[in-house]
Length: 73
Image (cartoon, rainbow, N blue to C red; front, side, top):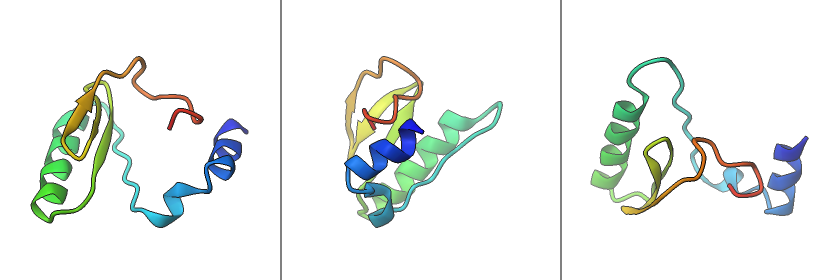
C-alpha cells in the first residue's frame, strides 16, 4: 500500500513522464546504460536508479539501497 500512497502524496509524478523498468538476471546495468545514452542523444531528461547508484541527467549520487522505498522515490 505504501507505493500508491506515496505516489498520491507526491502528485502522481509518473503520470507525466515515461517510466521504464529493467528486470532480469543478467545485463540490467548494460541495458540501463544503453537506454540512458539513447535518451541523452535525444536530449531528453533522464534518470536511473539501481545497484550502480542514482543518476539524474548525468549527475550521480550514491544509493543506500538497490531499490529505494516509495516515499524516497
